[in-house]
Amino acid sequence: MNLEFIESGQALTIRLKGELDHHSADESRILIDEKIKKEKFNKLIIDFKNLDFIDSSGIGFVIGRYKVIRKRNGVIEIINANAKVRKILDMSGIGKIIEIK
Amino acid sequence: MQKNYVIFKIPSLSVNESFARAAVAAFCSILNPTISEINDIKTAVSEAVTNAVIHGYENTVGEIEVSCRIKGQTVEVIIEDFGCGILDVEKAKEPLYTTKPELERSGMGFAVMESYMDEVVVLSEKDVGTKVIMRKKISEK
Image 1 (spheres, rainbow over the protein chains, first blue to last red):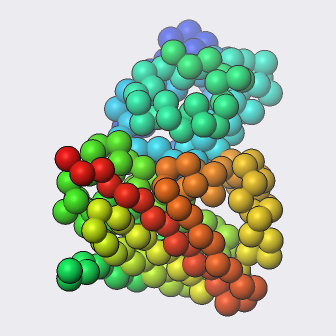
Image 2: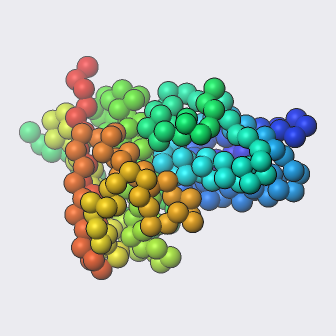
């Protein structure tokens, strides 16, 4: 999976490209959490536009970042969820705690 | 009718999760599935293989056997590991139940498999391993 970071003030957008599974989530979360902590972002936007695959490890990944940003009293939102992504997000009930646009 | 199948073994390295689901998806393409059907199969295979990597073998590396059979319009995928086994299969199947929350596991693996496939059977024995048998009928076009 490929990560692209876009910074705008205190908001950090992460564009995920490729496949979000257990393997890629483990690699990516360290990079993302370091960036959030180092640069003091309080809003995280996860952009799923170019994501080709996601499984329940991806849900664990989103909840994990939610916890990191909540500790900083920040917010998180998900944008550009396609049908595949939407199916598993809806199943998980994650929409109750995270805004999905 | 001649039955078509593929069987392969991979070491339980997380990097192989993507190979396993892509290989099964490629094999199933013979049945001309919809994008949605193929995504369901890929996701379910990914869940079962990830379980074998994380829970079956924990911090060790063992072998995972993946077999896929086509019977008429039905795909049967079997993911088998020879690891530690699941002590309580019914508990493991409960949505949001996980033994490894610290690893950011969502506890949704079996719920996804059951939702995305028509049938899921889990056979497990302590210190022998776990076998997940999943079936899905592909719609005729």
